[in-house]
Image (cartoon, rainbow, N blue to C red; front, top):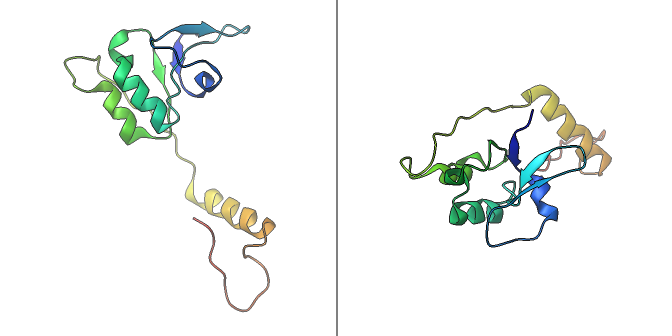
Length: 117
C-alpha cells in the first residue's frame, strides 16, 4: 500500500543517529527504528519518530510505552490505535497444550499443576 512502517524489520538494521527509510526487494518500506522493543521505542522518542513525518504505521506489543512517541500532542500528529486481540478461549487452550508439550502440566495427575504465565 506504499506505507512506511516502524516495527521489527528494523531489528536487522544499523542504529544510525538519524531516522532513515529503507525498502526491501519486495517494496516494503520501513524506518530504522524497532518499535517492538522498549529500547527501540525510547530511541524513537529521542529521535522524534512521530513528528518526523517519515512513518505512516507503527506496530508494537507495547502500546502504553509507544504512546510516548506521540507526546506532547502539539509536537506530533495525532496517533490512532487499531488493536487486535486473540479470543481468550483459544488462547488458553494454546497455553494448555504448550505447557503439556513442555511437561509443565496438563497430564493425568490427580492435582492440577499451574500453567506458566
